[in-house]
Length: 120
Image (cartoon, rainbow, N blue to C red):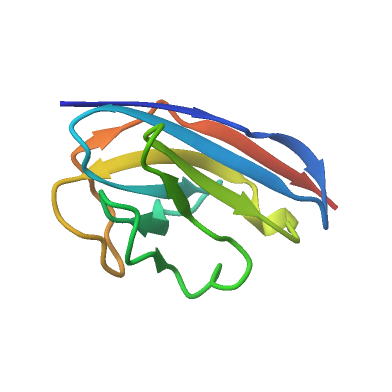
């Protein structure tokens, strides 16, 4: 039983930065961020363990996005730098019973999702 509430999305211009936040309540599961762009399948962007260790990133965002976890406040952050139009998507926070790995498309719990739109 995990409840996830996301914030931090919005409309920005290319090159700008955003920081997504996800407040997780309930059991401390592994938490990650997914995104689904128009006409594309959902993909795992980044994930982190329940203790804030072992970050995982999709190759496409490594060194551009950084995931971290404030364990005291049970909040997961995803600062996104150098945003490009192709980053436009609905971003969803997700909680998983098992650790993240490449190509995962499913999770156990989901936030409602927030829109990130990057204009050129």
